Length: 384
Image 1 (spheres, one colour):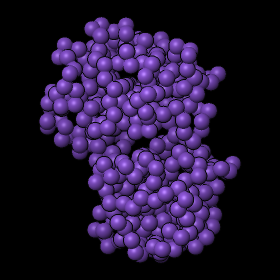
Image 2 (tube, helix red, strand yellow; image 1 turned 45 degrees about the horizontal axis):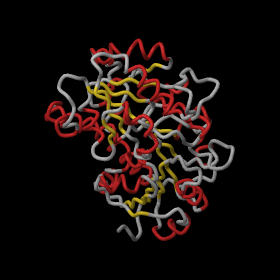
Image 3 (cartoon, one colour; image 1 turned 135 degrees about the horizontal axis):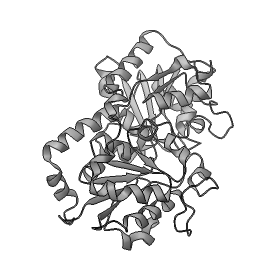
Image 4 (spheres, rainbow, N blue to C red; image 1 turned 135 degrees about the vertical axis):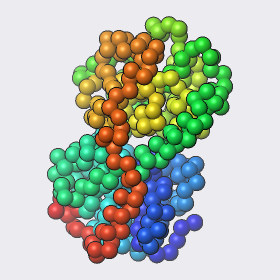
């Protein structure tokens, strides 16, 4: 249980944000800095599964009291799909005390809603500094008016961790990994994993059927994930031999959401190592989930299917051309047979060309220099 005074108070609520800070406390300690990590929501069980040290907090936690109890010189908050997240309240409380506030984002999607809260200003709760994982994400926030000199492209510590895990998986070999995670998969059929997502988020309407959708699904559901899954299932049914289909649930999904599709799916996967599962696949198909990016980072052929063209910008991997993407029924049915028969043809732009690896040290060094320079918080956050 964390307690006492600290240099840096870290707060995360979503798994994407938690991925950024799993190893950060150890890196900060090497630089003589103490930190305490607090987590709520889906981030708490996720950090626990990774063996990270953190303190769980409830939705009613008082931001000012938390800062007062631990006296941090810097507050670091991850963003969340919850507009009432404690993270925004911590940024606001840090402003009042002139404590420097730093936030980090894991992807370019929903940039205009990350610091809006319940208001209309996309930078209403902006921190003093923003740590971005790539140029695409940094550019989205600069375009919103975030002080360009206070947006730092650090890379993403999780990308480094994923790449190392991919190397370890390759040493084990795909056959051995598949035998462990998909023991019933047949030897004579390709394995295709579809990555589910939640049909909701910071912009609820963006996750439901709209006039700009270029995919229709089967017509019974207006949920974004259902529409794409239906298009995928109808397209994959035309492929011979029929692939072994695995539906991988997002941590926020419930299996019952996809009960109607169960007869068309061989296995529903939930829990355990998602990287082992995707590594075992011949092809991974998804929308804009981070796990699709992770699949590409470990060298698995990937394909993004989005219901409208603009969503290509939601995921760094598709925005930067690392993962190929389609958004029409015709394009999906054209590419899928080739992708299953010869997955290596989907290997697009190498990640090394666009991703800043070595992120953990870069992030820890930045925070260390920030505190060494006597940085103080601004009442205007990233707007100044």
